[in-house]
Image (cartoon, rainbow, N blue to C red; front, side, top):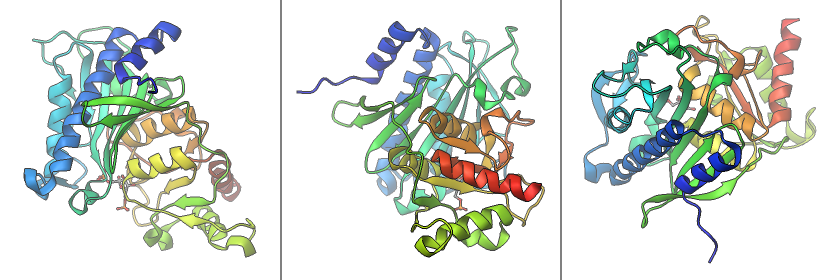
Length: 337
Ligand code: AFP
């Protein structure tokens, strides 16, 4: 029988070998993983758990909240609030930060999450997921404010996501490569199933919402048109297209077999830099992709170098196979010069 390594064992061994997962961070990751198991149970129940449909409310970005968005948000808060590993949390589903109340010890980390990414897929039984990003609280005073969260993605202490699909899979980086854990439902534990995964540098697959094509700017139009031209075009090869409309599922495919994911700025709302959120969608995914040898930019600069100016900041996203992201980023540079 092959040796099974649990998430806990992986974290303990990593700490022993490299010393980069202190006790509070280990607790944080284990608590997030436990919360994801609870969310997976609700997702699996679907209509039987009466968790489908809308909640009748909107989040801070004016998006209609699904019941599972709210349930997942509550599960993550409840699981994380008391352990003493966090100072505060921030979520796509909350207007402002959730500070750990005084009755609990305050930890050294800040946790950000999109509790249920891809929520338009909930009711139609397509893969969805939880995305999370971990930052250190840099100032040592007791209080914590939104400003403490406004750190560039390169300062993340850890990041990951959990996909609720045919399998429930937790994907994690603590800055030394990317590890994948699959939930063993009978045992109720995450088991290491892949380590040091690498995104192939080249690809023949792109992911973009093509229905927005007429609103894109010139560099993105050029890049996609060249892919669509296939063998007869300047790229000299045929491309395939995939779009799940859950970033977690699209990124998971790219981490597994390569590809490029684009959610670009578009002309309809020129003042909005993009659809996706920088701090709890783009940054954690960029960290994972870079740790797997890929690249992530907004078309102009590395996503993880961007200094956020607000919690729910949006960003244009291009990530995945290194040479493709470089190409589309070069097209942006050429069109600006
Ligand atoms: P939610 O965060 O509201 O669930 O939206 C999902 C998402 O942010 C991301 O996961 C998808 O890639 C993208 O939106 C899908 O967008 P389209 O609706 O344009 O396909």
